[in-house]
Length: 278
Image (cartoon, rainbow, N blue to C red; front, side, top):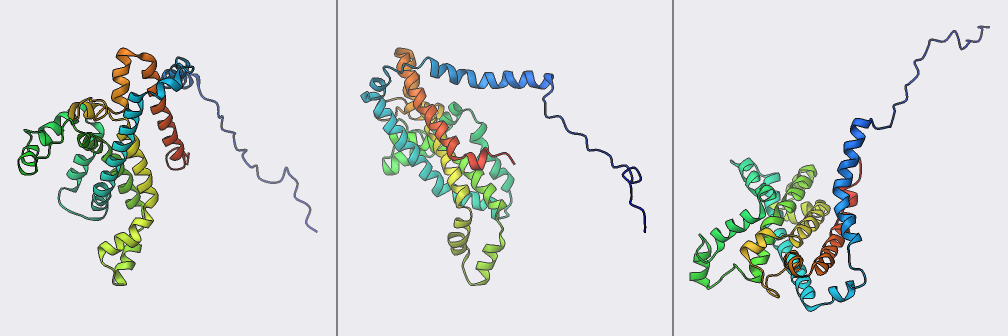
């Protein structure tokens, strides 16, 4: 009978070295400083909040006007972004045409454009003496600047790129063979988009809509430049915070906490899509 193979007779198997999970000090210290830099202002906002007078501050007429206007305008801007942005994202993801890269760059430009510059650009385009605004005023008597509709336009201008990027990325990840199979069964391209593509990319559209809504809700620079700061008509929550900070700091903190709560709610709603580690 063959003798039993002893442990010492077997070839030596190299032991797997355990990878250390500890962070080296030169990386740990800057990382902790970065966390403190980002978190400390939020903690200070919570510490300095006037919790006792918070109900009175948040139930004032001015606050409710600004909050209602912010919610209505952000929702309307998101609706505009959905109607225009989803077809635009599909065009960028599915159709090859000359200058597509340039169009994509122009669409995403508001992401990096200073909001005040965006407001000035809107004035030059849609103002009463603007390139298109002059025609709107002469032909239809329609004036957008310094109106509630102007708030919606300004918010849609800065929020739509978030929706387009999210939906385009989802479309590129989706398998186009489903649309091709629908076409072979006799469906038109629009029918395939409506019955196949839209249900397939619905999560990406929902995520993009939430991001666009949150961005529209927090818009300040383009809104104050293009629509002004008129209470009850164009004064949204960020504008109310800016005005209250000059006259009533406690009210400014209370309004800031409302926007902070909305931001946290948005992140919580998107945690499975954007905040889950691979």
